[in-house]
Image (cartoon, rainbow over all chains, first blue to last red; front, side):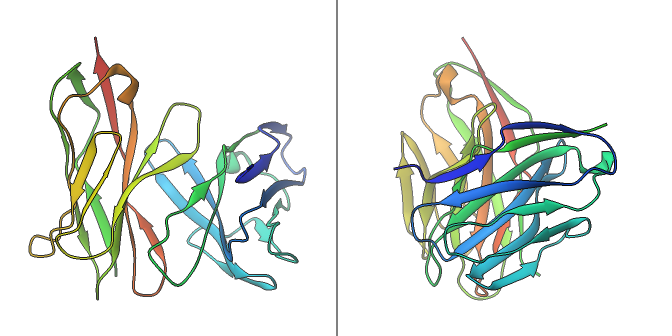
Amino acid sequence: NAGVTQTPKFQVLKTGQSMTLQCAQDMNHEYMSWYRQDPGMGLRLIHYSVGAGITDQGEVPNGYNVSRSTTEDFPLRLLSAAPSQTSVYFCASRMTGGPYGYTFGSGTRLTVV
Amino acid sequence: GDSVTQMEGPVTLSEEAFLTINCTYTATGYPSLFWYVQYPGEGLQLLLKATKADDKGSNKGFEATYRKETTSFHLEKGSVQVSDSAVYFCALTSSYDKVIFGPGTSLSVIP
């Protein structure tokens, strides 16, 4: 009963490097989202997906790419890391079409130096 | 657009005190309302929800009632414990199936 699994838990990148944050869920949820959490800024939506093959931008998409080739996986790619992308990243999933709450992963703490 | 407003934190209470965290919302249609809790170093967890007017959600001693007339969903607990120290987020699911989070309210409970 894993829920939402995020890897890695911690990562340090140099400016300009790229990397992929992994997210997998085993609950057959259609809806998946990526958020970033910064002090004093609450949760901000980066990208989301309503099903395999369908993705869309949230409020802060610049510098990030996503894809959704399967229902289970929703990786987040940082194309060229910048210090402004230092944050805690959360992946979340839920069912659609009703009053369903999110299940969140435990987060990835990313530092860009 | 849809939005969620929460009381400013941080909130500091003594153990066994009564807790209220205010939440009000703006939304078209009939949103579903949620409270999430985030313990230090962890992701958010769904605490409780309500899906229609006058519904009361409850879990772990926490309660919140969906008040459509005042567009509110205030979180309450009769007697807080040190283990309730966390950040609490109010949220709604809009008629477009989008989730809107409030900014979060930090709660510290001291022995």
